[in-house]
Figure 1 (cartoon, helix red, strand yellow):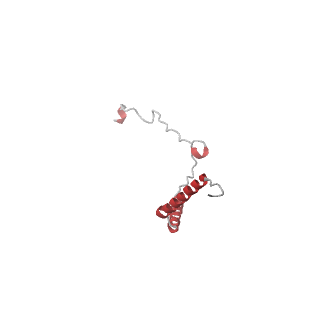
Figure 2 (figure 1 turned 120 degrees about the vertical axis):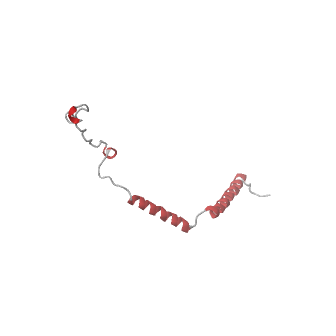
Figure 3 (figure 1 turned 60 degrees about the vertical axis):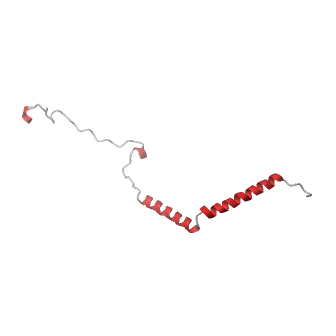
Length: 93
């Protein structure tokens, strides 16, 4: 028999850790990306980001969302009765 006692919890945890590490290595080989693929994907993401930023529109007129105040409204047109005769007016038949 051994002179020193064996910690069974430590042995169990070491076996589980090595099994998880082996599974992780298998998954990395099966499902992982190569360095070239990662670099290409990163470059494509940067290109799309730059294209998106270049197409951004800058509005020169401030609106309520940027200033907190509503833009001035145009005055309503004056529709006085003298400008538009009544439909039954004999002069306009």
